[in-house]
Image 1 (cartoon, each protein chain N blue to C red):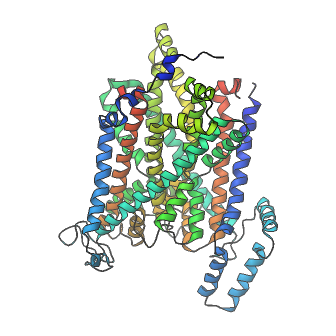
Image 2 (cartoon, each protein chain N blue to C red):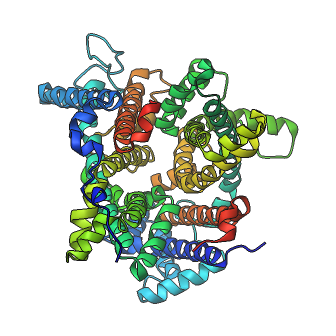
Image 3 (cartoon, rainbow over the protein chains, first blue to last red):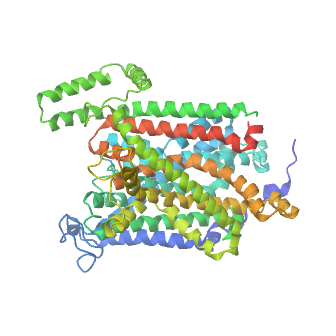
Length: 297
Length: 336
């Protein structure tokens, strides 16, 4: 029997002792990223609520107006306000990210934990599956499925993207589970009679939460990226507005060559700001989860 | 040299499994989607053709060629058999043309664009990242590259592509707006045509190089920074080796290993991003082929392109896996 040092059992990560939230809130990158992200979402949602439904119609505004008194962000060739489209697009795109990232991360965490903790044949099979999904460009199969479905909604799109987003978290969770399962506290849990499933959920999962949060953000970014990519290819939700669909319509109406720069620039800048904000949050989470990075700033 | 056989066997299994799963998925996914999409496409086509006498025969011919009246397993077997012969079927939009012909026309453009840009950005990004990471806080102006790389890394390829088209092709027309060569020309082996191709390829290439460079830069920088604290570097410094030699022969070489794994792992993303970049520049590669096939509901072309891309990515990954033991002696020695 291996002796288990007491201090290792009772040891908790620094982040837990001080309260994860206060550590996060003292991290500059996390706060800046979060503020920008929430501001984007809130502006769009509030904007959406204040819009008069009649203004959503095609032709509600004079066409091709540059940003100004007629419409804050200008109008499209079909006389729609870019700002009103934007206010619909931002929450929809965020919804795709949220649903897809939740689905992908949950699936990935489960598969990774099962594979890493139980080992053996299950692990060997799952590992091959994970590697296969990692080496196949998921966008390709998203294209195939979306093309076959002919006309997806924001929700279907989010679900399809989520189903292809589990391989990265699964791989990482698996390697974490491998290293965690030989730690003293897991051995103690096993000796005290906990079952495999209980150990996985009660002992292993809490140690990965910060880390899973960072992964969730990655999946969130990837999902919005996949959404805009598919939309630009003409596979997006034609009946709804997302940031990708805004770019798709702008491009297909030749907004670039007609010098309607406000039309395409609005979703383009929004995507850049959104990704930067999310990446800052991600960096912040990384620093909290991995204190060695903190000093480097 | 004793390359670990279990390592090679594992990578080979993954390679074969990837190919098998891709091939199988491309076959079954269209049949799992409710409502016979192929039938729907064919019906749309025959209406689009004005219900003329030829179109119904075409539909019937298609059903026969796809073997849609056979059992699913039979269909799968004949699909594999045809694949092995290199037969990917016929395009619906441009009927008598084989999918393989369309692919063969598009491949050189994508391979050229993607191959060159990936190599350039990987080398340049790794080199710059290593230099900036190694210099630490001593060179302030170099540190200014870090936020730039961060912005580039978080921007998708096609977003930069749109900005570049507007800026350098429309607003200040230095480069052509779209295509891979001037309209009216046909590909030939001549110096002036090569110049034309380079001029047209510059912007798509620039957007791919700049964006992927961001990530190689950032990851190499952090790799070098963590190498700097390692014992073997301290030991080399204590021995009095010149810093230049420690950098190239010690830190850089070691950091190159995870960087190669990174290349293998992100290949799928690079391919995906490049496809959409091609669409924005109307660059006649595989991405533009898929885009047009989507618009024309040309499923055989979509399937063929996806199959080809999935298999090529798997193949390149496998080759990188094989090359890995050559640069990492630890894998050569033992790997379980």
